[in-house]
Figure 1 (cartoon, rainbow, N blue to C red):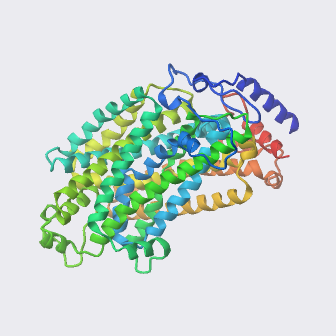
Figure 2: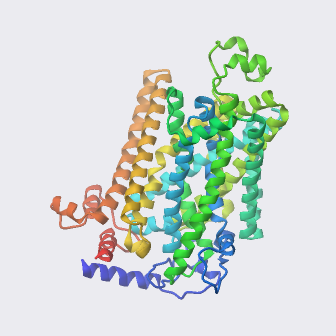
Length: 588
């Protein structure tokens, strides 16, 4: 085992050798191996020029020994706010309004808890990027064999496309509300193609200006949804009570489903890949453990501030609909507020209510507080859609570069992702209508829930690996806490997914359709379960040599899985066994 470890480390040094410099070529050519941290030295195929997310922001030096420096915090500020946009996409906003409409203020504590869980997981992703000099997708390429790696990449691409579809839907609905329906939905969907490419020109103005632009969009969301909060004037005592009392005593099945949906909507799979890449834009001397520790410290503070802002914005939306919509019958809304745009009062009973979505929420606010509230709501949705579109594009580019070692121009990446996202969205918008289009959002929230393990498990794997993280590896208490959160999140999402599919099954028109759905879902979940099991066992095999002895195997568990599944070793020339042995050896 020791000889295999030495052989692996020797080859790693040869592969990653180079010189450390502060020039911008570090991002193009990779980082050199320095000190105790290994860093990539290969450049993705097709790379022609570095983009602005590969620029490096200089961290100011301070001769005085300070526990905290605002100058340094400002230098590290940026990646966390870009990351936090995924917590504010149209899918999240819709989940917020449905939560408030279905359960009132009772689920605010769960929203806060989900945000805190997201912060801890994002912290691990950021530490990966800072400490190793590699982002999550690059680490997956290096340490997973080809077949699991390709399937993992496809799952993450599916999450990115699903997120992009939500952003297209939200943006199209925003255009429809702003134009009083004069811009049809299909036209709004098509407009999203042009405006996305328009925002790509921001790449020409530098990384800091790009970060300022995204922060401006977050500010627009804070102002617009904050305005709705002010005019709705929710009961502040109920708001505080909902935040601190973790209980929902009178919640029905719809409220429970929304409670589960909050976690699925808040924590987005591709966001971990994005965050681990964004933090590399700061010029951190990775040969110095002190500098790495400092970077991790400031990135955590910045991420905490950014997610606090996102939580406040989400809270605004929940509270607006908790105060004005919760337990209000549809007939009351239509008759008292003259909201005939939502339907005919005669088609509702005295107790029935609307199924909220982004469009109905905007119309309702317009009826309740005037057209200004509707237009301001639409501006907030538009800002959420546009900002999330750009971060999804960056996440897709990093995923392709990392998993496949291929770099495309940004416009090609946008064209691919947006085309895949627009095709089904446009079909639904043209062939059915607004209700089915907004209902598609529920499907997409379920999709994000299903795919979450393919981000959480790799993060836990590498954050727990001493071969990758060295002295910055997550300690045992943190690992236990992360595993408990991961199991909780994945368990909740499994429940949410099967509840959704059970409801869908009952609406299918024929036996043939039901059989087809069962077969399709069965095939998908067979692949899904196989990959989840593989990722879990890959972590166990790093930490449990005794498990191999109990299995009566002298080879690594990776080889057992490879032999059973017929998988080949990593195409980078390193076997998974050697990587595992290196990790175990570093613990000795």
